[in-house]
Length: 444
Image (cartoon, rainbow, N blue to C red; front, side):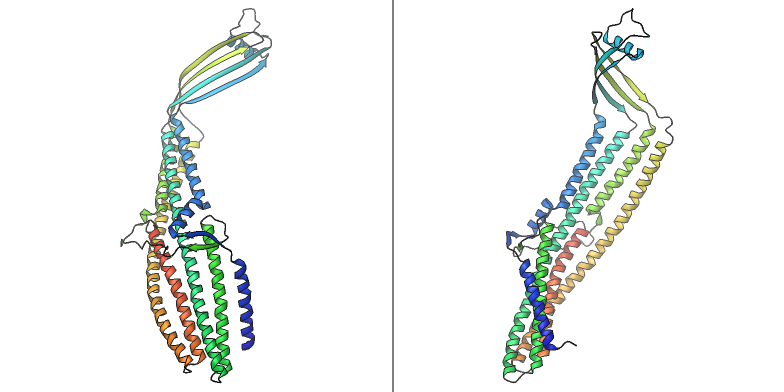
């Protein structure tokens, strides 16, 4: 067992070390005073997670535009320059540039040069329904990306609420411990006076001093925890983790738990995202099947040709209708259909799994909020009783009718009750927010 004087010295050294650490961590306030609503808005605007989700929406919009291009005509420009003495190519150039002569030797037309410029326009009339299916799939993908964005904002909002109340909880815990330190210091003063008069044993005085040192160590640890909570809160807002955080008075989360007795998980953003993914999988099946159907295209090309060696030029055009019908592709289309059907079945199974998980989360959130509310009520009564008990114990100790160990016990119970109330208050607010999220209701 550690001797009492040595234990007291060890606690004071620990308290001094923690005080140096806490002092080194403290910096000036940023100058901003945060309400919870302002903090949530800041996180939505500046958090890296929010930015990632926004860019995913932009990428999904890009795929929608890409799919929509199937309904637009395609224009292509082409040009080039070449020289050759190959009979076939040379003869074609001679004809295109309008310099044909009956004296030309077809077997040896000589070296000719050829410059050409062409413009081609094509328009798809029918492609087996593939473009329509691709467009529906990309639109569903965009809806899924937007729902994922909403789900991310909800998660970010919960994190901000949790961080906000983590700061409040840490500060209230520190305040409860600080109050305990003040009371124990006063008790030590009274104990010292009684010891000097010979009315108190040295061991009782040391017990009070040890308890005071232990509470001071806990206070410094709580203050350090509050600083860490502030740093984490700033990171959630997309800020550098430096400086102190000011929280506005009475600026916490005011929305209550759901009023409805039977909230539905169908309102969750995650459920909406999964519904969109199932719709996209359905469309991909249609797109795969479209590869077995014919496609019809209109096309027209205008071309200008020129040759400097033979000093000729000319222009020409071609236009027509092209129909393509797949007959056999080695099983490629069958494989695509099989894969898309499997992916659709997988998406539907994932949707069912998600719905079960969301229902479980809702039930867990409901039970957690009920527990948190009961704990808040119980800790409020506990603090009231502990305060009354501690006040009586202080009066009896000052009058010499109570042992130091009994006083320490009463003060310790009061401090613990206040700490538990701080935890319960923060826990109830966070649990209510979690319940609203689980029910698919807005956090604000």
